[in-house]
Image 1 (spheres, rainbow, N blue to C red):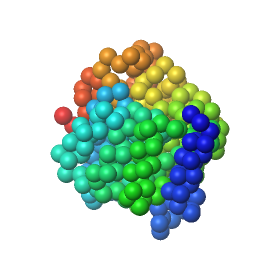
Image 2 (image 1 turned 90 degrees about the horizontal axis):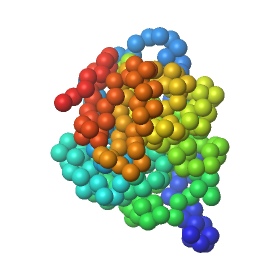
Image 3 (image 1 turned 180 degrees about the vertical axis):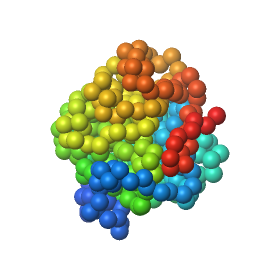
Length: 302
């Protein structure tokens, strides 16, 4: 695409950014990070039941976190072709507001339906990873999303490593990945987000591949989780053995389209997950995958 169009996009993004660089929620204490909580070994008491929905959006990703107090976090929104179906899912769940909208990275299969979500529902905070200027997309999907955000008078929050989207007693939603421009493609620039609810931990990995997985491990990020949203739809270039060993998931969810042309999920990746002891669920085989957590353990819902 012409250089001038790319710079126009960059200027539009800058106009949507908050003046603060950090993505810490207002009023959230920054002195206690999740690693410190885990180090104490103390179980955090929470009330109610948290619900997780990994929607069947074909070849793409869209996951909803429903907190017991009624707040909702949506991580990715699938491709544009599945936007109507995603909105129908959300309406059936009684969702009229997304309190935290997170775009892991601006590939169409993750943000293609996000403009429709912004247009149709009330939106609280929006989070996106920082990208190197030469990685800024010039796609119609990205343009539609930025326009929808601008038309609603909303802003985008960029995230520094180890800052919190939610930080409360017993509950956190934290960005683990770095905002440094260390990766040279959009997949490895994906925001990696960890949810903690009591003793339940979920890791959302966008489309990161082995390079970004290694960077997380070398940065000593606490990636340990009970449930892993498998990176890059189960591709052969993601979910390395070293990363799986660090995460040590009991459950894994792969979001991909039935009979997709990419061959996702890869047989070797499935074998690595099996050897790691993770019970794998796939949206291409099961449709929307649902879990609940009471703060102590997970249950897979029918």
